[in-house]
Image 1 (cartoon, rainbow, N blue to C red):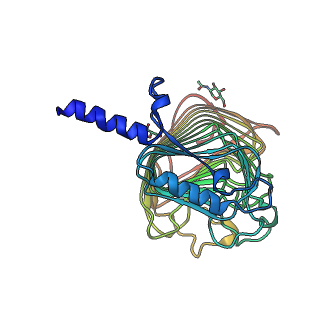
Image 2 (tube, rainbow, N blue to C red):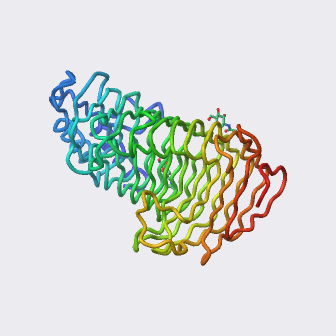
Image 3 (spheres, protein in one colour):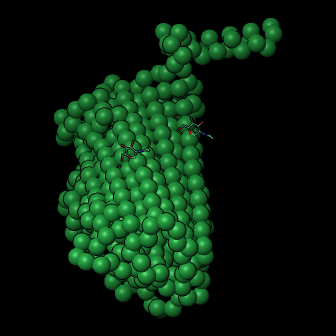
Length: 387
Ligand SMILES: *[C@@H]1O[C@H](CO)[C@@H](O)[C@H](O)[C@H]1NC(C)=O
Ligand SMILES: *[C@@H]1O[C@H](CO)[C@@H](O)[C@H](O)[C@H]1NC(C)=O
């Protein structure tokens, strides 16, 4: 048998085994479907579906052809669930139901997807973290959905509400798009960042709305090629890079683009923050472009003396090197007089910061710009003046 006809036979065999023959004409790859209600999941909002979901995932994951786990519409209670690979073939999770977390979770996980390549998670469903009880306390740290050690992921369409901690987070993820997401939690809810990205590369967040009690998008160390585009934030604490320099293990960050985003009714607009006098790392090649800020407290802020609640031991200069930061076409309104604060490190001054067409007005009068240890290159419109 020649190689090509051999391939055809093998392909046909796989398609038959996967029940995909009916799809053969519309260019869809063959795919097996694993419906959690066939695994004993009951949609009464009271019976924990985590075992049924895990079992369906395991069968799908063990399938040698592409597979999909389906959560049909309805209300479900779902306990801590670990959806882990490696899987034998691409896998999808379609969530059309409303998943409720237990009101108390001990530990740092609710829904975790990890050690898997080629995974798509999508649907019209809701992840409801039931966070209400724990925003007052400091201990609860379970994000609604955590992605870890994933290559080639796609997350689309879901609603995430009232998370106990972050709504979604990525750790050691390579190449993932998160799109058309809707995140919501009360403005006063603690630590409910929308999307937290760390130790990841090629992550794109687009076309999403995030209204939450903490950062809209937060980025920690170890990043390369991150794009945040067409995102509407607010209320929130804005889009933040950092805090950096708190831990000895931090790795560099580079190539971060925040484009065409609106941040409204938020404590901060676009922010970079690092701790004074602790550990070193670097941040370079950051682009804030086409940003609208409405009714924001600190519209543009680089804070290298970040020390919330007096939590730093020393007020010496930050050891984090920031370079090549571009603000282009940033417009809007500020609730505070100090519209621009670029407070860079005296031992590691910010290098090559450029501002082009920045036009932000203070609602109560003439706004200010404050710059330390940085000489921004300014072009086009510049309001406020001062740096
Ligand atoms: C990135 O992931 C997507 C699936 O989300 C995939 O289609 C694409 O080929 C991946 N890109 C690379 C360079 O692997
Ligand atoms: C900018 O983002 C908004 C949504 O936030 C979207 O409607 C608009 O099409 C985007 N513009 C471009 C040029 O992508």
